[in-house]
Image 1: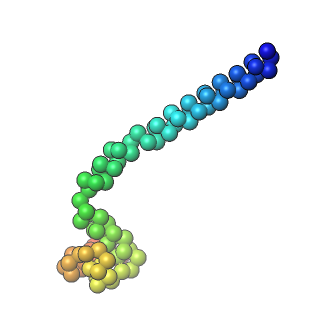
Image 2: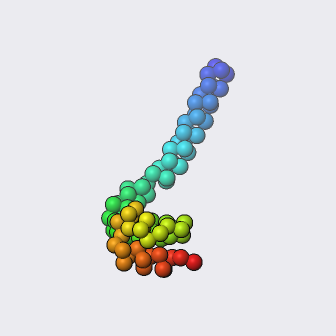
Image 3: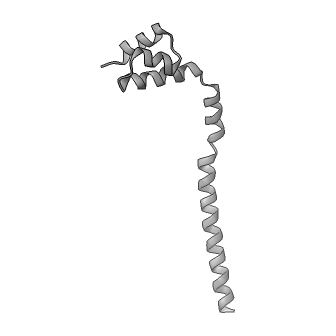
Length: 85
């Protein structure tokens, strides 16, 4: 009887621990649908400009910006002037 009681305690402790971990996982997963929706609705051109700004910071040329980010020559020149420094 003592052995069964010990086993029951072990199982109960395991269940409590699993419940706590499940609760923690839910708090991590719960905001994901909203974040995904925001990403899907984000203007794709803003991604190009963000990428271009990073590339300028790494020393990319105007030609590299037009090729890799799909910017026009004028946009690439403006990005280069704005983000160099």
